[in-house]
Length: 215
Image 1: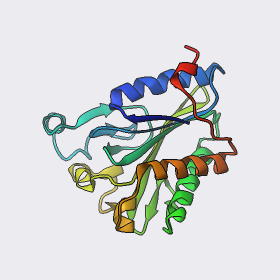
Image 2: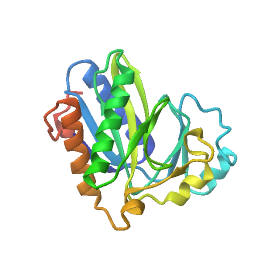
Image 3: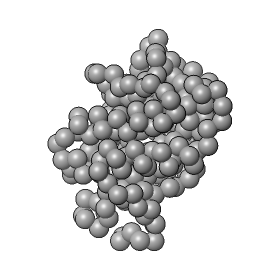
């Protein structure tokens, strides 16, 4: 696991690709990057732009960055208070199983907080009631995954109102903070996510430092 803190999307995207190369080449073990982004809108492979409610220029004028990327899914929002995780893991052709494992890890984190969360067949993500708690969208290249999940911890949910999140009309979004009615420390959530991923993927957690990477 590597904790990158608050990092601009473009910088994290480039770093993901470097870590991905190292994992593909066997120079680094499977790595879970945990981080937060400043306000940014990203559009995945299924996106056409129809689920943007305003022209692309409007988002930039309002302080959002905007990126078209290679992950699965449609449009989503990232911002402070949202825990973003990029599991850069060998998955070969078992992508569906990999998505289910990510969902299971997030369901376990929610259960740690006494919340009954569930995945929805047909598309990736984790829900509580009718509201999405965690969005998931991955890409796989040379048998190794990148991109990942976005878990709303204390996210400003109003920022989701400028898009149709994940292209799902009539559905809402929620956060741990909203569901629990209290502040939820990000460090605590990170620790629970690391533990859940270790359990689901059968891995031993290890903090990986940038200066250990073989570049």
